[in-house]
Length: 396
Length: 156
Image (cartoon, rainbow over all chains, first blue to last red; front, side, top):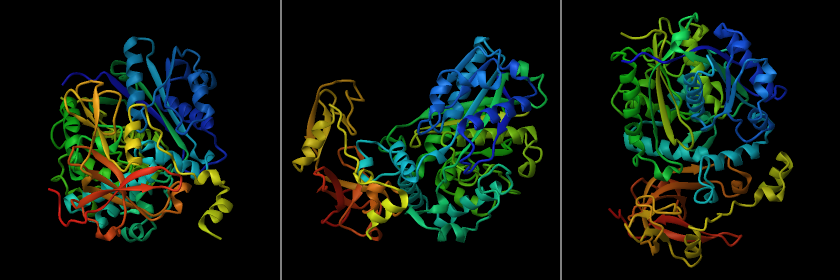
């Protein structure tokens, strides 16, 4: 493999949940400071600040476009500001922006920040936004389409095609919750659930029940990126070893997979490229930090990783193999289902957890001896996929 | 008190929140909605390469040509996947709950999102044959929807 070019050296995060008195500016400033402190650098070493946009709008966006962030946090030597957004894939696109700045030589350290406060919007505003955001305004929204209905259709199609049971879908939610119970910043850190609880909760969009759907939350996180050569000065650098990306569609009717049991055929070549480019060997992955946003998508992502035969991931999850103590630790922050859904922030929280794990800073959720992780994000109505392999060492 | 009045009181909604979203046609999709009003399901077909684009775009997504014809579809489809909305929808759809959303595949090529009507959800099976029905909403908007085909079996 070629030598890695970039590394993440520190992260910051705030508790996720309903915090109406904590606005998105406070979230952004707190996670920024925490990430810079964690990286072991000073605010004056930050050469660029990249922010993700606040979903559903906010004065925050204009303030970030107009350069509020470096001024507010005392990044007095910052040369570049930018906001980059690609929905749920923003943890990837902000990172790509950061890499470009690092390559240009304008900065040695780039701070990437996400903040979101959904609680400023009413329930109906949120329902309307996520009806429109996940669906086509002209062709789908007039039919009463919602994001949950989209995920429900994919779930129904996947179950019908693969024979996966609703109990196995529920088991994915339970596995995520078990990880969330180990995470001090998770929205659902204090409450455990069973498969029966998931199945008995209110039906929202059949076959999905309330506990199979995300709860929108306030939260945010940040990370500091640098060049791999500079990262060697850091205490616990995490290297970006391999990556892959692909785009499918805006509207689900144009998805590159037609059978919902075959979404893994879209994901798998991307994952294989990321793993191949990283230079790690088969079986070297210690962590599977997946972002699906709904339980069925997590199963589809696992189907793509070659752990089991496609369509069999539900059985793997139901057997506890992805839960704490299992052979395939998966989505160790509990993902949107357990950690909370902060708009574009789910991908950020999964990435930040990946870094924490590989730095050995994941507390009660720590997977001992973790060296290499595969992480993914994607946005839109399942419009794209980005897999990355990260490691706290360089293979070979 | 009916559902609407309850929601207005509890969530502070107004009558405006109960207005259903209206399709906002683009210049290149207007013909589809005009056809629906006449009870015809029209598909934008490239006059140069024959590719059918739905949703339609400005130019053919296969060859880039802006020359196209609107051809009437057979009005049949196959059910690819479905869901039943029961909760958590925008206020404008609350009074319709529960309702079925589906992905349907047309023999002409396109896949569409629509509602399945005139049936119970437990009668639905992926792969079953559907036929189009044109549903006129209270606000006069005509939406093509689908129901299980009167002729049994799959269209293949």
